[in-house]
Amino acid sequence: GPGDGCTMTEAETAGITKVPTYVIGLDEILGGGIPEKNVVLLAGTEGTMKSSLSYYILWANAYQRDVRGLYISFEQRSSSLLAQMAEMGLPLGGKVKGRLLMADLTDVRKETREDLSIPLFVDFTRDIIGMHKVELLVVDSLSALRTLVSETDHPRKGMFSLLEALRDMGVTTILI
Image 1 (tube, one colour):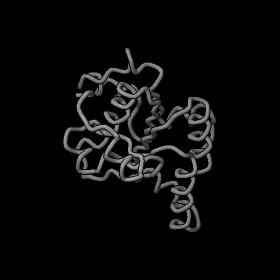
Image 2 (cartoon, one colour; image 1 turned 120 degrees about the vertical axis):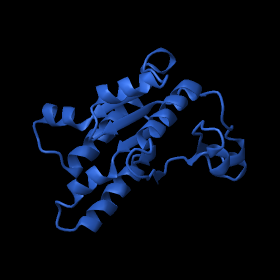
Image 3 (cartoon, helix red, strand yellow; image 1 turned 180 degrees about the vertical axis):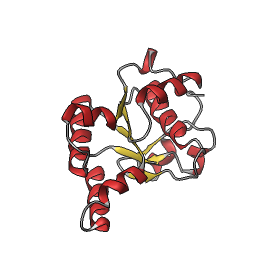
Image 4 (cartoon, helix red, strand yellow; image 1 turned 60 degrees about the vertical axis):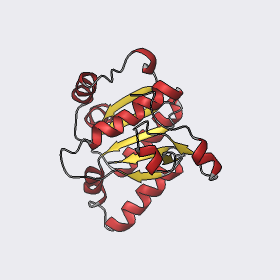
């Protein structure tokens, strides 16, 4: 549960601040959690609960440490993901209310009336992070981002620029 997990003391003694996952055993394997203010890739085949694990990390940090998190989905509607997580015992209300934000990019397209692009995604994400003082970010998914990058003349350079922009936002990012 959310109360289980390691403290950050192991990470702090190593000189690297870590964000706990609150997953029993995982924080110990990771030496205290995910390195703070880094972009980490969470990979796995379809159906391996990557989205659920990422959401849980945001939820548990909001619940345990009052950390604000943002989950951005390119493929799944926010309402669908929230219903799925509530069934797993991770509701958006209560102690995490206002600390866990959800955005699906279909809403961004409607609001801006623009085709989604890397600059639009970066600006949108940076604005929300600044406005709500977000510390943890989940981007679901890398494959969706790749389609935006592949539309540029130099996909490798575009992906590098995107990762650099995510790092420059100064938040801990989980990229699914």
